[in-house]
Length: 485
Image (tube, rainbow, N blue to C red; front, side):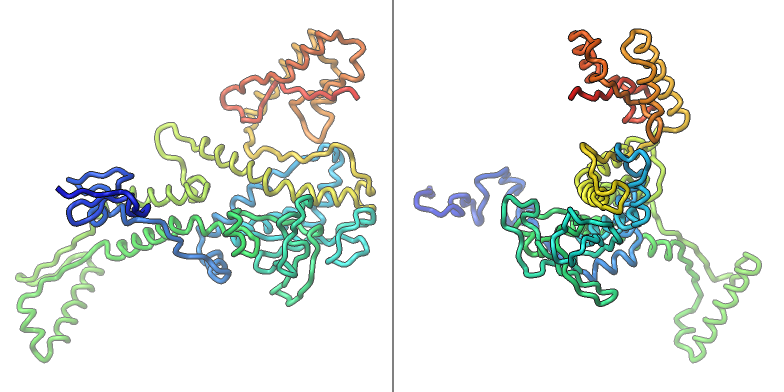
């Protein structure tokens, strides 16, 4: 009997054991009888991952321009991220929003996010009037105004000298300090310091791969292309099937003899013309006694279900529900699609926080620091941006919310926990009706027992479960407290 010595063998040799005329893996599932795990018999053993295609600018341009589903995937998330707007607590007069409108901020932000998804990254140059050229850092003490916003994709923007910030203490670490921006529409070429730009990267790459993209992220299409191609190919082939859905067959006696004769073409074509004329005029077929006319349709059973699977696969990799991506209603008994839409809104919320909020905060801060702006250069303390929830209650649901909040307020008022003025200001003192209650503990702390303060703090943390049919952001007992200074 032959023996096999593992000593002094390479790692590859030691991971394989000879079996008859081939090798089998010694570190995986194998079955000698069925060939599972055996190279040459199990096709899966030879399967491996390979990156087949890296998209270039021209291909991305053409896909966005000519493929409707690609455009839909790129556009819908940025639009949803900006759709309901945002709230700034210190902006009770909506002066920041009016400045944003004058800058066409929503349009520019949507464009910025759209090009980031399509190309992997984009930036928005801010026209900051501080008396310095674009390639110099912003002088925050001398900002007079924000004049304009212009968006450029990653193929129009790159590091001026090919280097990236190496100082670990810099907030710009790993990114270019000065960008070269080449506006291909106008031919303008200029340099911009990173403090004057709003940058968004979409599909973040591992550091080693990021080097191949000049420091930018990857186009979203890179990770969904296989499913997009499968979907498009499946529907294109379904269209070809529909063209040949019905086939007609006419059996003509002595057809071979007619074809062999000199006047065959003329006679056969005349017969077909007569057949088509009688069929169209009277819907009656006039046939010779020996002729036979048949109509056969293509069997398409199972094709609709198969197409649905391709739609689901594309929906899964793009993160957009079928009901929103393809405009289809939810299928199945008692299905409304609400869960899918809520999950999608949760995903959009994450993108708002990670990608949109940083650039909004940077732009808002510069507006506040503008001496000719709405805050006259005085940045308020402790300001923050909150996005309005994407899921909006119906009027009926909103009425239920207000009723429950009013009942909760009545309980607090009866027990002396809240003051009527506090409730009035909290509900109706802002830009819109609010269910959150702000209690001024500093003004009331002398009249509070320490145990009562602790009890209020416990109530602050407690959040009741929303009633059925009420939006996820409804919290009737949510109370905000202004802590003593």
